Image 1 (tube, rainbow, N blue to C red):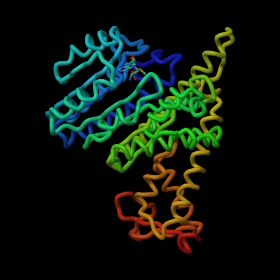
Image 2: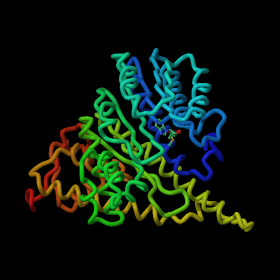
Image 3: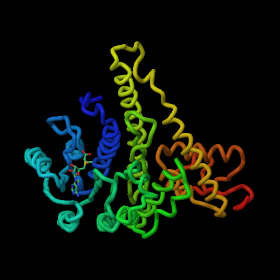
Image 4: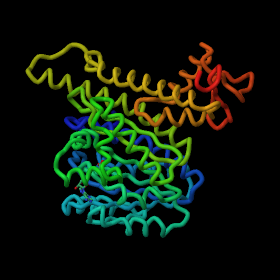
Amino acid sequence: MNGLEGLYDGREQTLAKHEVLRRYLQRFAFIIGSWSQSITYVDCYSGPWDERSEEFADTSFGIAIEQLRAAKRDLGMEIRLRCFFIERNKEACRKLENFVSRFDDIEIETRNADFENSISDILKFVRADSKTFPFFLIDPKGWSIPLDVIRPLLECQPGEVLITFMLEFIRRFVEHPEPVIQRTFDALYGETGIAKKFRDLRGDARDDALLHEYLQRVKRAGGFELASSSLVLHPQKARKHFNLVYLTRHHRGIEVFKEAEKAAMQAMESARAAAAQRRRQSGGQMEFLDAEDMHNDTYFNGLRVRHLSSISDKLMRLLQTHSELMYDDLWACGLESPLIWPTDISAQMLKWRDSKVIAMHGMKASERVPKTRSQHRVSLVGGAGA
Ligand SMILES: C[S@@+](CC[C@H](N)C(=O)[O-])C[C@H]1O[C@@H](n2cnc3c(N)ncnc32)[C@H](O)[C@@H]1O
């Protein structure tokens, strides 16, 4: 695993998060760098946190710096690279400052401060370069960042945002009796009494609703046309840990994010398999088969099947309530969900078309599969409500 062996043992969830970030930023920096003169990366909760690599290869800021510099080198263009890092912990911030001081090809500012009190500093830094394209990573240790606090960052145009949604904590507080916790929960979603909306739901249905509602709210708060999410599982248990929520204004962003997610899910499952094998072998009994051959992927596969089925229901409901829809809109709606890839959406369309459930319009005779940004349209055979 490209020099990262052992760095994530026992914290495989961080590997999955970092794989999404690494793979996404690799393409992001290349794509944005090919037309923009400047890229600004803002890490709102930088760390380092629980790092093992002396070179900080297992930290979000280390990954971002590496990917930004690689894109600039590979493009061979004069891109202005800028980073803003915020870290509350004094000792962690000292390590961060020490590390970043070695890079003289990036304009870097650090703050040993609370993120919540640094919003105006972040905006000032971003706005100091009117030609820059900012990317914000909001990856707190806890679960609650008020929507109103992050709103000014979400509103930055251009701009993209990646937020860690701490599902495992958040779901615990839906029914919490403490008014202070309830107020914090409300602030996360930006609405008083929002928890009521989730109380009649249970299990996966509640998890899905918590994520969906959050995604819609941050999307709306920033005026984003598009959003997506991915899922990170608990390293050792058949349990969801957290989600990553991604916000963009470009179709291409969703495609790149989904490619990053798909590859990261493979890395996550390999790491979970290795973790399970290490645990089994800790008693001294060695196994002959590879960790991946021994891995029980029922939980992961079950979640994917569940998402596929709920997306199919959701798209059908959309078709039933519209006489005709742009394929782009169905695509974007389906890809908001974790564990759904672009090929799943086109496969679903082909299945429905072949069974004469839908008709596709605006496609050339030579085109078999619907495409985004091509004015392809979809309607139910027999019309909406059929
Ligand atoms: C989950 S860790 C971030 C890890 C980092 N993004 C990564 O992936 O490598 C959260 C970090 O935020 C710091 N932190 C916690 N509360 C903070 C706050 N209010 N403002 C800024 N930093 C904070 C913690 O000290 C910790 O280093």
